[in-house]
Amino acid sequence: MIALAVPAAGVRSRIGSDEGQVSEPNQATRIVGLVALGTAPTWIAPPRFHRYISFVDLTTDSFVRGQYILARALYDIWTRGNELADVQPALEYDDTASETRQHLLPGHLDRLLDEMILGEAGGYQYSMSFGAFFEAVLKKDSRLRDCSQRVIWVLTDFHPNRKQVLWRLLIAKAHICQALIKTSTSDTAVHPLDALAPDDYDKFDWRLSNDGASYQEAIEIPFAAARRYLTNYVRI
Image (tube, helix red, strand yellow):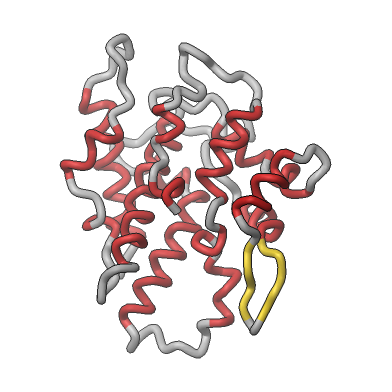
């Protein structure tokens, strides 16, 4: 869960940076990228569990409803590149080819998540452990490794200034993850907009002295865009 809540880890390690650019998805990109997506599949795959909460009246149980909305938002965010690109100031974005797409297609995400869910016990689906996930990703002939390719290509050569749509996506995702974490210790569901305060924004400042981007370009604009998306699409 920690890896899900800290999407800037790949930036801090300079994966895909100009200093050590990755032109092909190598082992480091594969592991760091998939850890960011896959350490807790039950948190990002609410559609897989919807039939188990179908008996809960979400209109009367506001806390359960809030948790479900957050889990659904965490799943959806990986597929919302176009919506995030359209938030003002809009970004030019070509999602017609895998080489330029900065989000996942629902079918690709579902296929990956299916491989991470091992079976059922006591009426509930359960996912693989992190150790099993890590081992499967490293095996060249594993189905999970094959399914991960779309995720890897999205994250390959990632830099906030180069993949600005993905940067907005990861910022929105960080808000949702923090909301889930805070909700787990609260009596009420925490909205993502309340999960990160302005004082937290500096933790996402990826700039080095030679990057040439202003604080407004690096932090203020993408944060404002991500928060506008959350205002429009996450209603608790």
